[in-house]
Length: 102
Image 1: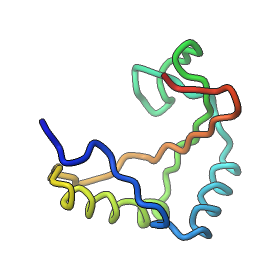
Image 2: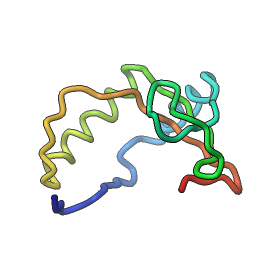
Image 3: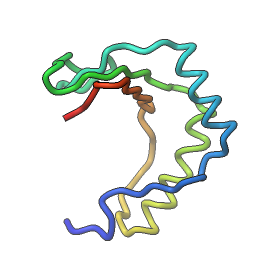
Image 4: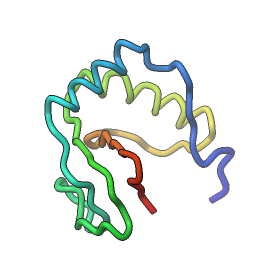
């Protein structure tokens, strides 16, 4: 497939207070070492040669209410036109200095 865009970013889409709420919510939940492969709820197998970062799974409606409309709109605007009928949990990832993925 050949898309108009492989990814989309939109600076300022989320208000600063929403970003802060997401950061605080993630911090309250606590993070775990990120994994790779065998993608599942636990995040896959830990392989520090490939990925060193921490993740938190965000499973809450108020975050989806901010993200899903944007994803749906962009899906149409850039011509991906995927049939989106639900959203998985959102993964919040943090990288400290010297951490990586890839």
